Length: 290
Image (cartoon, rainbow, N blue to C red; front, side, top):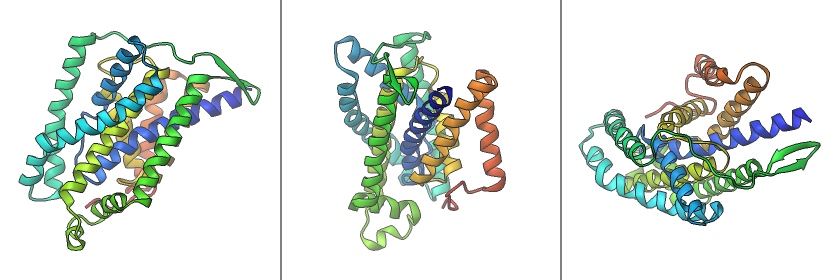
């Protein structure tokens, strides 16, 4: 019974971490934007979901609302704040450095706004918190729902990347940005779409987090770091790598929390991260970043 409970805990956390990292791997792997404010906007989506719930909106409906809103907001951010950096940068490496500095400032602006609006307390709401008897164990229904949503949304992104022209264009830009224009790909437009799609993914992740975890205005940095760990472990720009690395982190957290000490979960994550980097410098499924 405890094994089943542990399995679903790891599966839910792993699926959620993979979903979070998929958005960041699009922004970093395709658009070459190292978005350090990623977690802050994800937590902002959690607060938006909380406000909608207080207005009587079902969290599933708020998920449908927040995904296109996240896409639109990050499209605007790219056009207004990131595009000047893209035009000024002389290389992909220069763009990555500039984006780190720019999004580091955005991080504090977004976090400051949330602290002013909501303070530093933890927030949560009750949604499908009743247990479901499954395979001899009681699993919280909201965790099962989060797992299903993560699978559906992540699967949808995978189909977008592998079965559509825009997805193939994103993969081409991620693999060979210098040669993509030779086959008629508008790199700037595709990069903007990838950055905005990453925004949609983080909005979805923020809503899902709010369904079963307490959250606070200052915890976005933690999720940004976890997303970065998953992206680098899995290989920059690789969705399957995000899935595998996210699952590794999720099950590591579940095992350490259950059998050792909940306070050591973050240390265990970084130990796993260092082991992967030691033996596989480009990640589990990675390629050398261009």
